[in-house]
Every structure is written in C-alpha cells, then in structure tokens.
Length: 217
Length: 217
Image 1 (cartoon, rainbow over the protein chains, first blue to last red):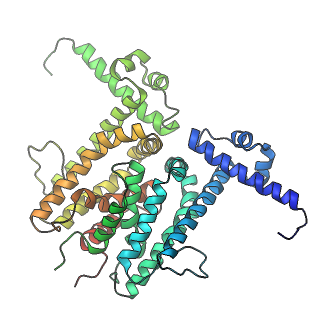
Image 2 (tube, rainbow over the protein chains, first blue to last red; image 1 turned 135 degrees about the vertical axis):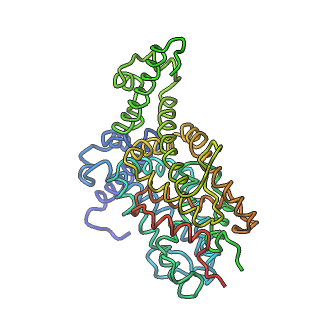
Image 3 (spheres, rainbow over the protein chains, first blue to last red; image 1 turned 60 degrees about the horizontal axis):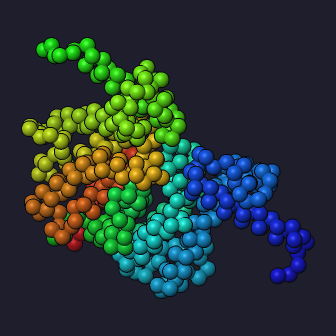
C-alpha cells in the first residue's frame, strides 16, 4: 500500500473498470449479446460512454474482457482445487492439468472441474450468450476461440503428450484431436442441454475415451 | 394425379406452405432468429399473416417446421448415400445407420455424411441460427433436441446395441453416453469453428473412440 503518484485517480480507474466489466456481464446475461450496448453498459456502471471508449474500441472488446476476467477468476478456483489434490503448481503461470502419473485420474479431476464451471449459475448465462453469438458471428467466435478456448486446449495437448511419453497414450494419436473426445461431449451436452451434466458423466467420458468402446483383448 | 375435391385450393395451399417455409429459412439466415418475425415471413412469402397463423401458433413453430423440412430433405440425401454403399434399407422408415457387420466402417460412413451436412452452405446458416437461439432459450432448445436431435441419437443407440450383441462394443458401455464421443467432437468443432471439419477428422474420431487412446496390449 505504498503511495503512488495518483492513488485516488488510480483507485477510481480500478473501480470504474470493475463496474464496467460487471455491468457488461450483467447486461449480456439479462438481454443477450445483441441488445447489450455501450450506452447500456455505461448507464449501468454509472460512467460516461467516453470512459468506456477510452479503454475499449467496441462492445465486443468490453465483453471479451469481462468474460476473460470472469473466466480467470473461475480458473483460479480450479487451480486451487487441483493444488489441494496434490499438484504443487509452484512457479507455473497457467493452472495446467495435474500430472500425478495417473492419466485417468488427472483427466477426471479436470473434467469434473469443467462440469462444475459449466454448471456454475454465475458463469452459465454469460457463457451461453457469448457462445451463442460466436456461433452465428464468425469473427467474434474466432476471437473467443483464440483468446479463451485455445489456451485451455493447449493444456490438454501438454498433458496428453506427457502421457504418450510414459506410454499411457498411443504414440500415433494426435493429442489435438484426442482432446476433443474429452471436451466435445461435455460441451455438446451443456450447450444443447440433452441430459444432465454430472461428475459421473465426466468420469465415464474419460473411461470410454481412454479405454475405447471395443473390448480389450 | 387423380382429381380430388378442390385441386386448385389444395395446390395453392401447398405452394403457400412451401413459400412460407422457404421465407422463414431465408429470413433466419439473413437476420437471425430474434429479428425474424411472422410479419417478415408473410411479406416475403407473399401471403397474409392470417395464413401463417392458420397453420402455426408461433414464429418458433414455423421455424421448427421449416428446419425439420430442410433436415428431412437432407436426410433423404444421406439415406441415398448409405443405400449406394450397400445398405438395402427396404421397408425402413428412418434412414438409420447401416449395419454391415463392420462397426468402424459403418460409423465412419455416418460421421462423414454428418460432416457433409454440417458443411453444406444451405443448411449451415439456419442450423447455426436455430442452435444459437436454443443455447440461450431453454424452451426452444428443448424442442429442437426433442424433435430433431433425439431421433438421430436413437439411431446411434440402436447401432451401438447391435455392436454389443456381436461383441464389437463392451457390454458395460452405455450406448447413450458412447454416442456422445462420436457426435460431441464433430458438433464442438463445427459450432466453435476451432479447426476444419473434414472426413479425415471424422475417421480419426471413430478410430480413437472405438480403439481408445491407451495402447492395446
């Protein structure tokens, strides 16, 4: 808490930024992506439109930041969970997927955490609103994938490559495709709400994907 | 072409119905689900609003029918494809998944056809528009799943049960979950446009799901 050049103005900026991000998430949850406007966000956050335009070039940019901020806070929860499960994670920047040497257990831990995240009512509505808009708006969708999804997928690639080195995954498997057998079913069930998304489901997806549907000799 | 009671009026009804369904699909593709209105559909189809309300209670109902009609026409194409691949299909109502005795080949045939369908530019925009709206609107989403998706998923359950009887799939696998390892990755890649959706990808998903990621002893 050492005094800096302009503590009041900096604190005020932080508060405004926080209010804008919260207002953006609340609005996209309530009225959807298309009907959320910079004017609406400004009114709700109690700031002027110019304050928003000083920091972000567009509505899409504010919402993407609001969502990254929310997802980041949620990822901290997952990281805390995986640390309590024995993963040291010291000095790592990204939470990562634990590597206890037991691939099935590690994947179940991460997919169960993903299930909890998808079922979290605070995350659910804005995630649905942004995903739905990305499905019809290719440009927004690409940004969403690039900024938010790809970094998560990279963690699966790393863990699956490590599993190939220990012989737990076949050497001829492409980890970038294999990971879709894990997250594709979860996202499909969540997006289309076909059936409940549970820990038991996450466990079965991991067991089926790793072991295969065909009998083992 | 035997004359019926009112051939002109019946033909006019068919033409109006067709024009309404086509207008509904065109509009949802161009302006999205929310901005598509009964008024807009009527104007584009060249009919009065009352004509639409005589047959459908709501915008959602017209669009669901338009989409079922489109998907039905597309499914006929898939059925023709699987018949030319050696499946007789005589007397069957639904196209079904072929059962040639080779599970991997049969699944690849169906997933490749799904890839073609998802990449079909005529189907793509309305499918995206309806899926996106179903993601945020739980009621519409449930109708979409019940009327359109569940009947397709049932075909996978049937084929996977047959494979359990021939010993090609483990007896302890739940076919309703196993099918999500096949369609979940395809839908995930298509919806989020992470990477190109190709026949080679469909083949690999089938190989990975059936054989598993872990080495076989």
